[in-house]
Amino acid sequence: MNLKLQQRGKRYRAIGTIAGRFFRLSLGTGNQSAASTTVSRIERAIAEGQGSSLWPELKRALPPRTFNVLARIADYQEEVPAKIVTWKELEAAFETEMKQRILLGKLADSTWNRYQQTIRAFNSFLNECGTSALPEMSRPFIESFKVWRLAKIKAKKFSRGGRGLALDVAILHRVFAVAVECEMMLKNPVRLEGRPGDSPEHGAQPFTGDQLTKLRASAKDDLLAFLLLRWTGLRGSDAVSLTWGEIDWETQEINRLTQKRRKRVILPIPQELFFVLEAERDHRKPQPGERILLNPYLAKPMTRPRLYQRMLAMGKRAGVPDAHPHRFRDTFAVDLLARGASPYDVAKLLGDTVATVEKHYAPFVKELRDRARRFMENGEGLEKTDCTKIAQPEITGRRIQ
Image 1 (cartoon, helix red, strand yellow):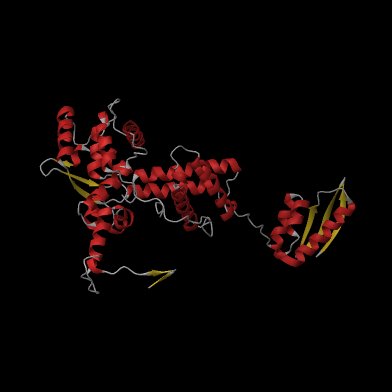
Image 2 (tube, rainbow, N blue to C red; image 1 turned 90 degrees about the vertical axis):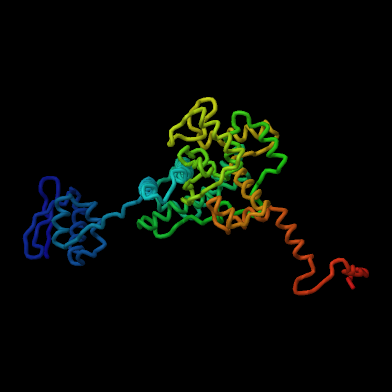
């Protein structure tokens, strides 16, 4: 290879033989010193081949046509910058997967709606941060989102100490799991904050008998909703979507596939609820596909947020704080356990697991604890004892004799 400088007009070019071929290549400069330096770099890059570190520099210095000729001679190919995946692409991929699960019957619409709440919150956080690229969403970044989200939750009227954060984090972890599955990220940056709903300090919140009496007296236009929640233990999403076709009038039972767990529950209808349902049916003469609960003033199907608001308003009239719909589910479960039903029976009626019933509801049943006390004091265990004649220990100073 032998290249020489040649001036043509105001600019210089390199002429000579490269790989047995003769070339005249414009250098794109009128400065002799710069042109001479460029020729030296061309000769070195050709000699080093496609792996030379000079190619990016030559691309910036040479006219495009000259650089392309030289790159072909050395078989140099510029590395294509890796595409930066954005949050919007991940959000679209996640939405596609969730809609597929809904069509397959593996995900309830209500669950997807809850997912979207978290996604909207994360979008707001990203907008405030001015961030959209997934590589920037590291674990410290997600931890800052948790702090931001917790502050937003606690600012709401019924925040319950921010217990909803665990669910938001679990949903976000599920979203980023799709990023890992689709090879958008190498590792999930979201660290879970325990299982949503698990809280040793906050378990079931059943109403007392006195509170139920006050709520029934204050139900007014919400009597049907009150009785339906009280005697079925249905979640709010199932209560508002329950249709007349799911009632078997002959057997006096409700037959429903629950939205959250997709489990079939068959619930006997107590007479108090059955009479009210019959009266409502005779008054409205509904079609099987029509929903049972209506907004009393608009005569339109009740929505879950509206049911929540009306139950709170009913509780306010009755002087019962925080009377949200899920407390009726807690009450239904605890009441059945107190009446002698087994955790298995309650789990079947709730469409839940026995483990969940034992964990969340059984500890709140005083009758179960009293029964255990009687078992411990009957004197028929491994150690035969007469509880009426147990001597009291003598206490001497700080020692028990």
